[in-house]
Length: 127
Image 1 (cartoon, helix red, strand yellow):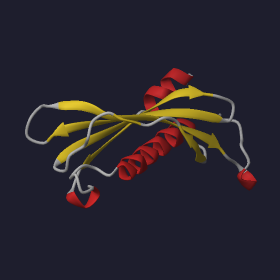
Image 2 (cartoon, helix red, strand yellow; image 1 turned 180 degrees about the vertical axis):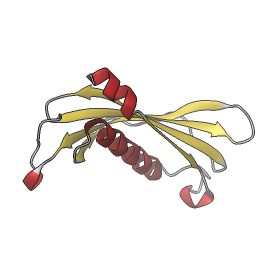
Image 3 (cartoon, rainbow, N blue to C red; image 1 turned 30 degrees about the horizontal axis):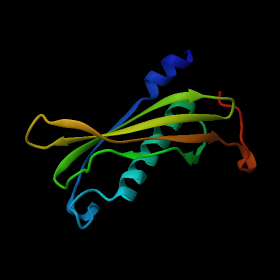
């Protein structure tokens, strides 16, 4: 299987409902909660791509373009954008959907870098 096929096969989409226990005093999703969900989606994507032990080493600029209100549905879409020797990058976009209409828009996006690790937690080549 070539790299492009692996990228397509590892694309990860996760849906969540935004409940009040995940929101701030503005009744929108906590930024930290959004980042946690993004890192988890990125980790799953990286692992599905490599089928190796992966760890997050950095997150690039995360853009919060739109607030995510309580009572909406979010879709997290993770996909590999770069593959190096021992590292790869995963882009995660969060789309917000209203529950009872067709309205949908991109709310947050960011990129995460992962490294494949082996014994002694040392970087290893991505296979």
